[in-house]
Length: 250
Ligand SMILES: O=C[C@H](O)COP(=O)(O)O
Image (cartoon, rainbow, N blue to C red; front, side, top):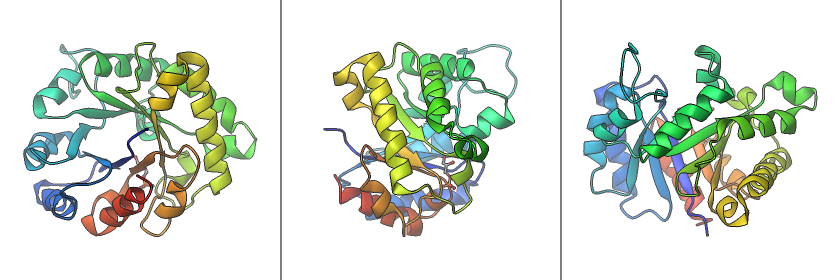
């Protein structure tokens, strides 16, 4: 049985004052029936990890470098994330694929490094609106999945997030049938490559405009094991109802 996961991606948002929201989320979720993960900007990881210590909440990064150290100005390594208290990392988010030209090959190398250094990797996949409208969604998702996930992945270290690019921050959400089609497809492809036992243990999250008012119906969809939430994870007021909606399926 896969344990559900409610994950928040704060993206490039949040000064130290934002950490009060972590406390608010934790106050309302002392003993959650689902796993919790918050990925703040790198500047807040160490303090967030202190706030979350002893709680059910994991703290994660939003990216890591392929290498563990060296002359890579501005980058952060998997080892540094671990050292700061992070237990997970988001990799291959569409914003990084776009803003930093990250290819599947780069995402795959980063994911391997993250896994080898003990980080749960939340690998993001998603099609553009143009690809969706031209009927290429499954082909795109299949190629990203094959190219971005390393052979060393296990059900403990790999989480997949399906995030249609056109649904991120737009208020647009695919139909429940469209979400089910992609999530079922991802499970099928994982099974073909890694076998049933491993594939059945991997959590597949949906991401893209998840809000308190649509979370429950999305969580009822086949093979949806939780959410990767952007905007609505920035406030406990919005994120807590999403956690509660997920707990109903735990
Ligand atoms: O990583 C999170 C996603 O990009 C979703 O962002 P959003 O919930 O603001 O649409």
